[in-house]
Amino acid sequence: MVSIQPPYLKKGDKVAITCPAKKLPEPMTDAISLLQSWGLEVVLGETVEASYHQFAGDDDLRAHDMQRFIDDDEIKAIIAARGGYGAIRMIDKVDFGRFATNPKWLIGFSDITILHTHLFANYGVQSIHGQMPINIPDASKHSLDTLRQALFGEPLSYEFTSHDNNRSGEANAILIGGNLSLLVAAAGSVSDLDYEGKILFIEDVGEYLYSVDRMLRMLKRAGKLANLAGLIVGGFSGMKDNDIPFGQSIPEIVMDIVKEYDYPVCFDFPAGHIPDNNSLTLGRNVHLKVDDQQTKLKFV
Image 1 (cartoon, rainbow, N blue to C red):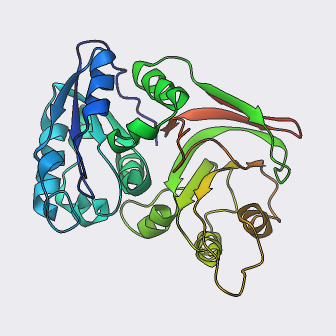
Image 2 (image 1 turned 60 degrees about the vertical axis):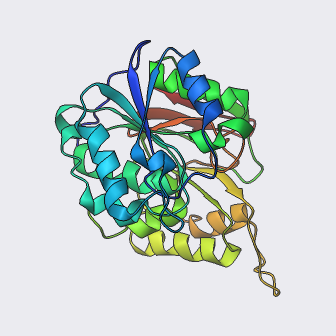
């Protein structure tokens, strides 16, 4: 499948904020101000103020809100206000077909992973794994800068000190991935990804160590980890353990599962449920280089 890059944003463009999952606890004043400071016109969906149990309106309303912005050609980017849980409940009510003829940027992470995987699996459209409005008050300035760079088409690359558990190597391939729990939830569905020859990024939050082990072993048993070009492990925040310890850290779990493969693996990539959640353009070609000293990722 050919990767489709939506047009980069320019000053004066309209961007929409919608809530495909959990409801917002408070207004997004900081986020709106930030987007406006970038020269963008912000349009808010009905879901921004909606409430239905834990969700930002019922499934039909959240699907309708997303559909409205997909079909509106004046909207150049759709930003998910937050994650939580709920996108998988409304995704099959949405017709994403307009992305094939009028691609636009979709931005978000965590629960929004299911939308990222669906767009690339079905339409080959690139999207941005990055900070969402609910996170902006606590986000690092650098992570917000990377979101602007990704949206406006500025050069994007990362370089940081290598983790002791890294496996050295080099790869050029398309970047896919997102939240591990949602990658597993997409498996076997119309939103599932082709992992063959890709560089996989994973992150998660608040999971038990045994659950991370189980999810990765599921992906392995499904044949999704054997032929990767590389593996990038981002933030695994707030991990939990049982009274009887699981006995392995996240790096140890990962390396045990992929030990027979030879592709590069890096840990502690600055993306995920962390303040310094740097932007990643999923579906885009990247160059990954991992050695004992430095890890480098460059979008090409």
